[in-house]
Amino acid sequence: MKSLTATSQADPSVAKTYRVEDIAKILDIGRSSAYNLVREGHFKTVRIGTAIRISRKSFDEWLESQAI
Image (cartoon, rainbow, N blue to C red; front, side, top):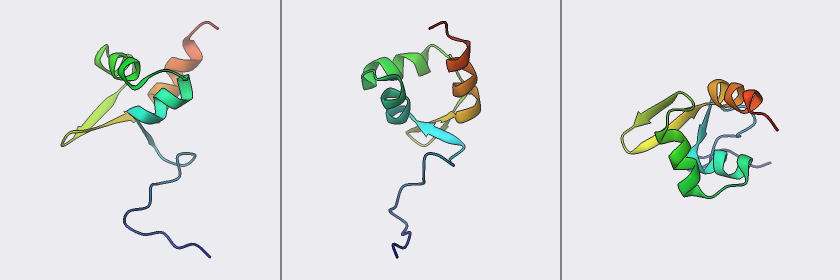
């Protein structure tokens, strides 16, 4: 059985936040474009030192509101 260590990343399916890299993958866009969305304030974010975390709820709501 695999044990979790301090260096293991949290399971994104249960995390309350996304990383910029996560939203880039979800949207199939580049990291720069994902950072631009964050900078434009499309969803709630929090900075922890230099790390940026995006509220999963606000991102998911924003994504649902976009016309496809």
